[in-house]
Length: 66
Image 1: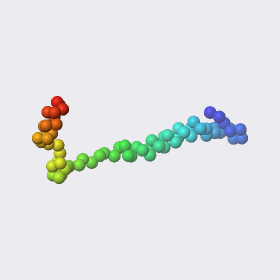
Image 2: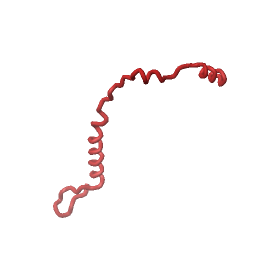
Image 3: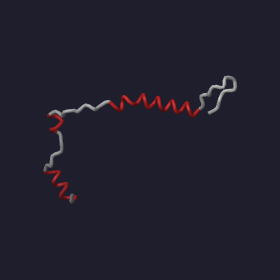
Image 4: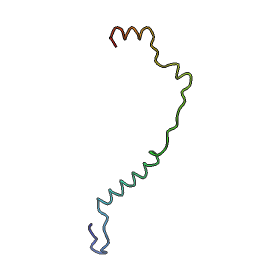
């Protein structure tokens, strides 16, 4: 690590600056990562619109051999 000529104390170099910057960004992002997700209960309207194997879907499967 380089030292300043006048005081003899360690100078802040680029490597330590970016190390501190990365540590600060990690600490800032930690609360967003730790927050638990809330479970959502789908209502009747959402479950009505789900996939159903109707006649036109069966015909598609039959024609395309799925």
